[in-house]
Image (cartoon, rainbow over all chains, first blue to last red; front, side):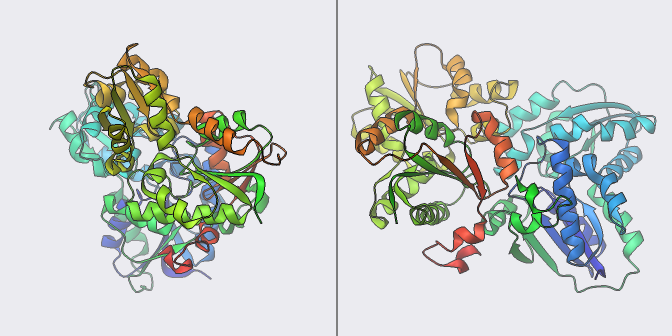
Length: 271
Length: 271
């Protein structure tokens, strides 16, 4: 049975914790279930149908645990699976791409906008299509090593500098850049240095949180509790999460085999 | 009960498959259990006592499944846990550091040797101490992003070039470099380009395989079978393993919770 004060949030790993933080600020009395799929991180290079299967299992699991609304706090999963999830589940399912587009539309004056993300998110064209539909001129760049910089705790390092210069140094004339991956806000200082003060960095979290607040604020509130489910090792999760500000709440190990039971294809889909 | 034709091999992820390949070439009729701890990869930045706990659990699990000898196919785990494992288990346990040192000693003419690895492996000083004990002059460099380049399938990419130049471009006068991480042989082409023809690249796998062959060749042979246990998702494992030449054999999902039962501290150590 779903509980109206309970929101499910998921990501491939710890990146979605940046979104969870914004959601908690907007809805401090709601309860949250966060699922970090650390046994299968990163999603950015995996085939779209594989990521779609992961997103479906996770959403079914969170709904089974009582979530009355779902936030897909992962750009790759949003890009390839959001519409599917919205069709398959009869509760509200949000993603992080539309809020990112909205944030960019509010920030840009020139209408020339950049977006960076994983290879999967950029290859899907999900951001580009929506931005162009809003009349913007778009520059898109995949930055596959950025997630690893963050998870290695190297957001402020020579490696971050040289990779940021590599990916972003030759950007065209833009005035706004969407950080199209929930890990990337951690890299905002180095990205800002490379792009200079003429480019405004925007991300989805605050706009998404505002949208959930407007829709869900009238729900019966919960107790402000957070439970983290992790498919990988809880100790390793807690260790990695330090790079994003740490974990607040209980951490529960969720074996992949248990999650597979929620696959639309059944457990046999694990191979 | 242990089976004398059965060898257990483990790594944090897919990197150890480079070692498994060399072992199979040396002992084609032995059976192998390979454990890829993909739910907790990478080991290179985790605290030594955490990695030591992982190595102990995994070894106990492999011994319980019948392994009569263990190959720690991970430099980080070898650096921080090999001696512990050799004391705790009464079967032969090999690591990849001594074979790497031996390979370097055979290759160098000048006695000036470099070693690269994860932060954990380099910080442990395990290679440096052994090389210096052999009278060599040592240059050591941690390359934390190299594992991620390999697992992202970016071994042959502009990112690999710029990171290799960053880590290795200012190397002192050496004639031999130890690839002190089982993932790094995949990066040998780009490392070789940066260092030039005057530096010989060596790795542990072939020397380690020779050592096991000499010790174990007289065992009752097995059937040349391989079983892969993975703590993360089997589908994701198979996908990532393509960067190292793919997986040969059955893949079995091994939940972390099941592995924790082999912890010397018991299941409660999972938090």
